[in-house]
Length: 439
Ligand code: ASP
Picture (cartoon, rainbow, N blue to C red):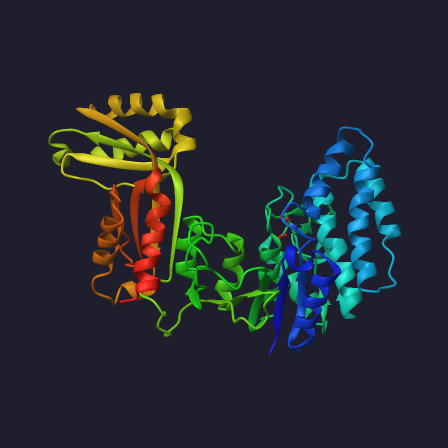
């Protein structure tokens, strides 16, 4: 049995948090590979070390004095080292970092130092081997990720190790130039390590007890999801729910390795298990609810539209030519509605309208903004009668007018469009009917 454990920034923000992480690792001998993030926020108004590094490097490239900013970062690490009573010194590392900042070594190099230094401390504290991610995570010259070489390098290097710390978030090109993933990318590193060592489980330790059924900023104390499939997770993440970096799913999914989201501050909680498939019945009919605000609908109306071959294609082509991605396209006999993101559409609004007029000569085009889309997702919906009925009656009881309905052919989700003002109430109403009432 082999487990890969990744700890997020808030789980490693201070010496106290480091101690909790180490206790978790030591409690299970199969937790052999550790992927740390950079120190995150210790309290809500705190600054993440990654952000401190970006801003310090910003000063360096503007040729401003960055000594003080770098010193503040050094202090963050020194406090952790002191709190853990370690005898290591990062003096030399900071000297090199300072020199490289002066030589403008790159923004990615700058940001990567957060994970690199945290990895050094973690390895010393655990007595594990430190493996620099620059050695085992490879990027192409165009800065895209090289999955094949990474997997080869990692498998060869890690399989000879019994207890290693591999910093998250970055890697390097063949010539050694450091490249990072996008923000939150340590999740990806954890997943790559799990794939390379054929781990039985990828544990992702964070500050929540798993993936929640609904957004805690909207629903008070929502329950955590016990088991979720990759497909369900994708649906919910796409609609705005976030715990894990989206690109972290692919490597482990491909190898059938489950991910367990756990809470460093509450290790007794089981968290959420993310799996390829499961015969475990979900506790509720739905697995989760997620939603995103900021959509516009464009309704194109033309008498006898449905008998005009190629009508939809011509309309959609206008969006394609304007590089606007489409979310949903519900249609009626003589109408077709297109849902798009408002911020992308707004800029090109007039070109799109003119384009549709030219392409299909509609009778009328109607725009409606400030819409929100909500996805009710659940593998259990397929086998349950009345889910749609419950969704709409709960929304009706909450006095919410449904603007659009879309049930995916997989029967894994039902998406409803509502007005922006109804967005939060709609999510609360849905949570109540499916989780709290549970009839
Ligand atoms: N430290 C990086 C960030 O703040 C990467 C990570 O934490 O995953 O985005």
